[in-house]
Image (cartoon, rainbow, N blue to C red; front, side, top):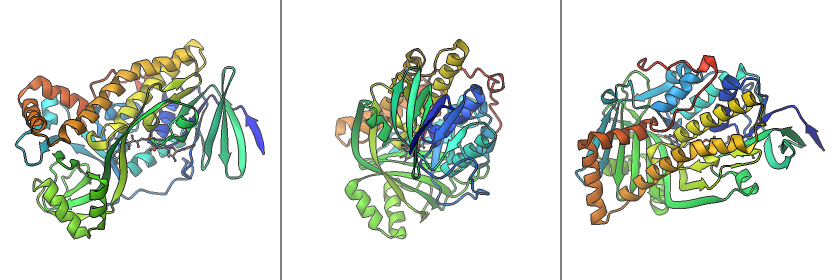
Length: 428
Ligand SMILES: Cc1cc2nc3c(=O)[nH]c(=O)nc-3n(C[C@H](O)[C@H](O)[C@H](O)COP(=O)(O)OP(=O)(O)OC[C@H]3O[C@@H](n4cnc5c(N)ncnc54)[C@H](O)[C@@H]3O)c2cc1C
């Protein structure tokens, strides 16, 4: 049976990292809005696991310094920091070639260049924070469609055998990189298949990581090792992102754990000593997906639904977060001015302000793959020169550091008084 309910202002399709962060930011910055999140997965703020134990096999995300500042403004950083490992140094190198560059947090007057946080911890922290907000959560439930109507949208939802519609001023699509809704609503998507996969696992090494993130470019694709484990002690554990072609992935998956450690050793070298253990492996096909337009009257795309990047530079969620705060800033303006949330003057401004950041970040990640994925001699020489140049030219290095720290874009204004205080800069 289908009925129509009209008790919300904003509907968010997808309660993943982007959707849940948006809901929290709206509760903090535009608390007068009635927000409903619809999430396919059966996890919601009022059905949370009792406690959290950091697990060796948890997947993690590199959060840029700029993302920390956003979470501080949302009042969530203190909790996230309990299980976030700081990155004090970034080491970028090219296998078999001499170029290398190093970034140090202290050179930028900061406590860290970024942090590595478990995805499960971030999800749980977001949900716990949402418990104290009036955000309404429908899970497990699925947004199946949307029709425009005067002054807003009518969103179709399926929850078990129940089908109903929810009307609101605007739908925000946060249903991830393989967004079915984006396709269904006719947004034009550009997808480029890198012909590569990311293999993710936690690894143990004989040497401690020293809070260093390693980005290693090899002729077979890039590889990242991010410091993982305790927020205060440099442990012998790192989070691995290993880029592999389809056939190389098959070969690596067929290996025993010991053989995988050996293959990893050959690819990465000895900067962290010997690889002694590799945890559960997850793998993802790598594609660059972007849209030409991320808004329509009554609809906005955010997170991976708007732009899904190669994970090598750890930029995807950081970029998403900056976009979310830009959208929240526009919704604040809409409420202050009495403009409907889905009006193109509001959504179009979100797109205009976010577009430059998203285009530059896509280009930054994409060019890392293209320049460093080439073994042709002129390009190889150019990238050696590039790495050495980055090390020698302070301006170039600062530019690279700003990209890595996520502090190069415009600063969104968070206009609620309790969210606008200047974040602390030295407490880790
Ligand atoms: C291997 C890998 C490593 C990465 N590492 C980093 C990193 O170090 N740093 C970084 O910044 N980024 C990183 N990223 C990117 C980051 O993971 C993504 O940007 C982020 O997870 C995107 O979140 P999202 O909420 O947009 O999408 P998702 O996490 O995919 O969430 C989408 C949600 O929508 C729900 N959903 C789907 N369809 C519907 C529907 N019809 N109705 C309701 N709900 C629906 C899903 O159940 C899901 O919960 C990495 C990505 C990969 C693949």
